[in-house]
Image 1 (cartoon, rainbow, N blue to C red):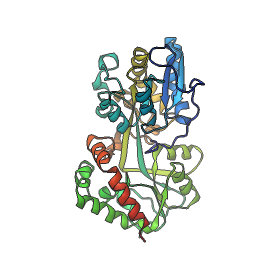
Image 2: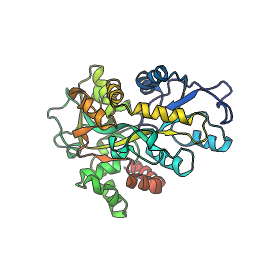
Image 3: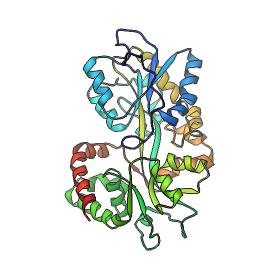
Image 4: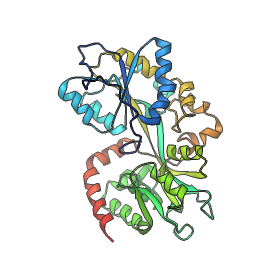
Length: 353
């Protein structure tokens, strides 16, 4: 959830004053890098500190800023300031291909069958399931929407729409709203006709759209009545609900993905990294984490431990029945191959009256 999907600001960076921590030749404390902010605070309380107490392992934290720059620095300098990092699927795949991440020995972690299939990969252990949903303010609609197609129904809901700025997610939502099954989205999107179809569908609501860039904007606009319906991160809506806002989510055709732990190849504490990864697969801890942050567990048993009321707000179980997995092989291949082309076309399209 990130420069791409999660707009979580760093909380702090516990890095040596000289900048990057020591090279692989030098011993240092076990170091975990994640997304910072309230998200990493929740991780600290659920995973980092308990792991330290239970194993006697001292640890440091750092903030991963998203993208590839920090990994490129490791490749260039042969210095590895982190042992474990949480990444999105696109960086996970690249890091695995370029030898930045350890090829995991799953016998040291957990039986693969205990996890959601998409949480298991060559170099990554999926930790959370996050999603993008349709949201609305229950105080500001005369009739409650129920499906993705309702987002395009401007007669029943004539107000403004909030959508994430950029082609990713929006092209997928548009095709699904136009009747394409989630399983066929990237097959259709991989054709010129499919791309044209997606932009044509978006054009139907373009005059009503306000484009948000920060994840916090969607719930703010909904709460203020600036938009009637909005695409939003499920965690953002849940946090707004905690603050007393009457915001609601629609899970129909949600787009969801998984963030994963990866172990840095060449880091001095790889063995501890394996122990930490195994620790975070504990289903009870994964279920406990959902109380602090509304992202779903990846351990099948952990999903069943989530209280029913809380499960309604998580990208898990029945909420994902009609969803599109945005971290699939097909999704990654499409956006790796066509990100620049789609962005250029998107910018031209947005600029048109």
